[in-house]
Length: 304
Ligand code: MN
Image (cartoon, rainbow, N blue to C red):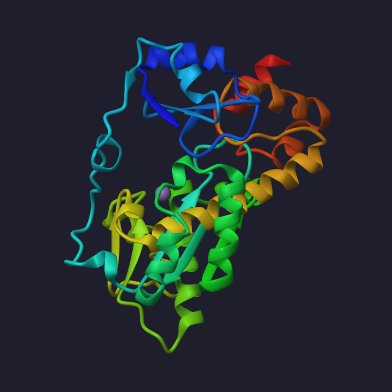
């Protein structure tokens, strides 16, 4: 594998050279799979060349910087609540969501309990670098996690998502879902008590709790919110993988239903696919596949 760093202009050129022809991993703007190599470009500017021809392909781009060997893990510092010392070794119920930025497909929230005695098991599965894993690898790891760990998934398919969005904003939908998923796992593991709950932060703490004001049960004790929480505890990394796996399964379902590929992510092809669905069944049909409030809906309408 070779990792290069592209500026926004270079990223556009790469995308044009390697058009997306497969599922987009989280955070990716394009992903191209060929026989001997694959190329994935991320919003961060990271471009990953994988496979036999990875080096050869990467060599076609002498103007791109090679990623510094140590840069990958230390660049992103997490923000939010200050965690107790040694937090990574706690027994934690963690939660994360996926699908937030993808026009098609569900918003999926997962919570999972990783007891400190299971940290080694989770670590050895290789959950840490979830952003760079292929869908196949995600499926393999998620299956093993789900076989061993208590978890709960809230999978909000587009039709439900659009209906709920009539009544509340997306951030509130997320807050309610995280609290609910964490609670479900908490109930499953009784009488065991986790040391803490960790949420991959999407809103600051006061806003998160304001959204939960009308919920019957709200977890408040030992709850921490941090950004990049997957770096703070494996429970969140595991939750992220389980959520991604569920989202992938849902994309397959939607693809079957449409009769053609319904992709994750947000790129030009998305608008054309949406236009096709609009043509077939109007906005209510499109709403079974897509998050209608995204600007893509207008762009798709403009294509008709
Ligand atoms: Mn997240």
